[in-house]
Image 1 (cartoon, rainbow, N blue to C red):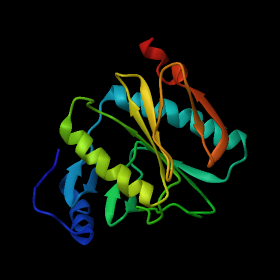
Image 2 (cartoon, rainbow, N blue to C red):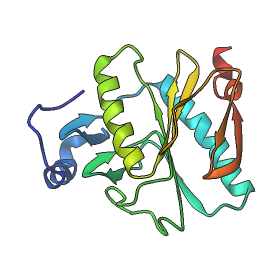
Image 3 (cartoon, rainbow, N blue to C red):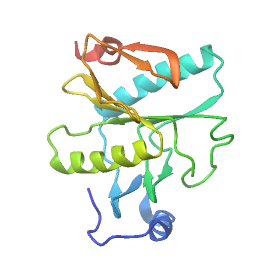
Image 4 (tube, rainbow, N blue to C red):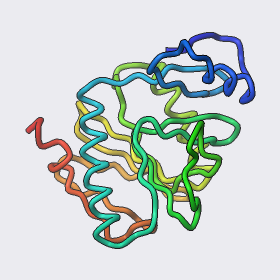
Length: 188
């Protein structure tokens, strides 16, 4: 949900998120609007499942990198995004920020759609995907109820993977393979 319709700058956003009375809410700056990140236990569980497989793979392959969850934010094209999961190599970002948002775009992000019927959520998603791709980031969009994932990679056509397909790490992590049945197993 957008908190206001007046456009704000990244500096105004940074000042906003430093307010002590915001509680545990997480905010993004999308299209110049401050937006509270929405989720549900169901969407969060799917993101955690993908993150778990991703972390296990990165460690097993001795990959040097960082996997962040839904509280890890990134500055992307003068905006601030908080993907449900992100991977960024240590080569690209040697150390994660201890406060605020990281200034380096991750290589892969996961965005779990909270409400597949929401026009407003799609509007925000399109904006984010466009900026992620321009920053060189691959975006995995998870549709929990449709049980599919769209893969948006820079310079590539969108790849839709259904429940019987397998998600892979593409050029970033070519050894990574995750059958979608493993992601959506609680729904089958």
